[in-house]
Length: 122
Picture 1 (cartoon, rainbow, N blue to C red):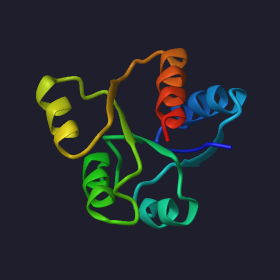
Picture 2: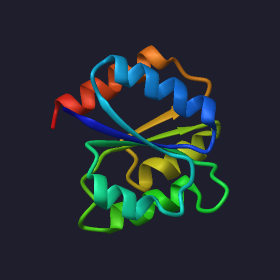
Picture 3: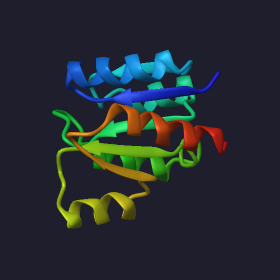
Picture 4: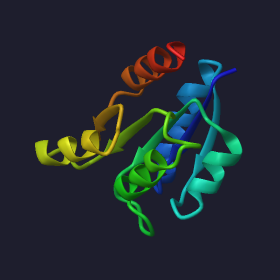
């Protein structure tokens, strides 16, 4: 069974994505804070991470950089799910190693489709 980790401080976003992915038969791990995410990623070894950029303690972009610089987590695809919709933000996300840059608001159905496409390739 594929495993996706969602890291977002907004409970509604977590519930909405978790519900959509679970109905598709995907195991979901949710985190509301980014500070303990690195150890959680190493423990859980998800097939994909969906990450919010704007988090209170450690930004999603900084967390992405940390995960991509660690050999234990560097190969895990990361989707950045964010309200930051400027082209410069997207370019920074891609430069940091983000596989997909998705702006809020988003379609849960479209998100599920690209999640399945991505984890199906592994």
